[in-house]
Length: 303
Image (tube, rainbow, N blue to C red):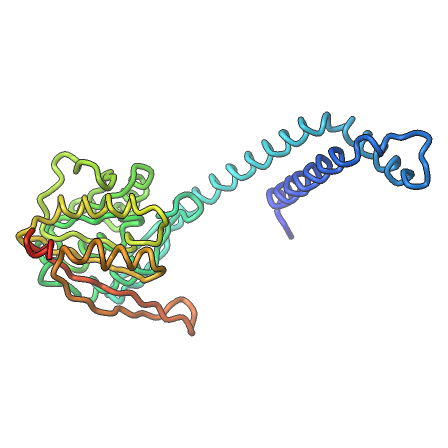
């Protein structure tokens, strides 16, 4: 049976639909509906008008009732978000990465775009946990860009032998990253810091041996954020090739492929491999590309 909360949500949405219909009806029929005495074409209109008048009298003016309905819906939505956050915050899930033990992750998909596990992040975490890029990561200082839940950085610290991992993202993601660090008892190795692409690096951030990133190249009509990502990569990866940049990428649209192959990769020497894993459904096969990159010198990059 539906809960009281579910019934309230259903009632609020029904109220919203009714108020929109009411506003549309009153704007279209306000004059004709109140002709008196009603002619053959206006009896139904008059009947509807009297019903609307009674309902409006109980609920106030249509505009006021509409605003009240919207306010109710907003309140219920915020209440739902808070309930969902509390439930997920206290009930982390295990992520199988093919290692002896899983990662423990809290996700908040209804809160932020980056607050759930995307395909490339899942696969790169699994790749690192199973020994991919092991020589580069063992004993390394690492930074993860656009960390989201932190699965990639946590895998590097827990399974690949990284000495330090700084996981970065926007300010609203930092509490979730810190929570996931604590869930995996990696406070001594991992930290979470705010980093907006294109801006200055946080104080005390770097230098690093390895830069990790998953699902940071995505389709967008406005390339501003992707160009800002490139600027940040240039700050972190000197042109002497001393820093390893590991990128997990899932091709989605022409925009992201153009950026990757025309604006980003020409500045790096790289190798690429395909990563695959079984999805949550028996017929689902997950895959992405993993690029291992070293930045070229200025003269090579301009060719």
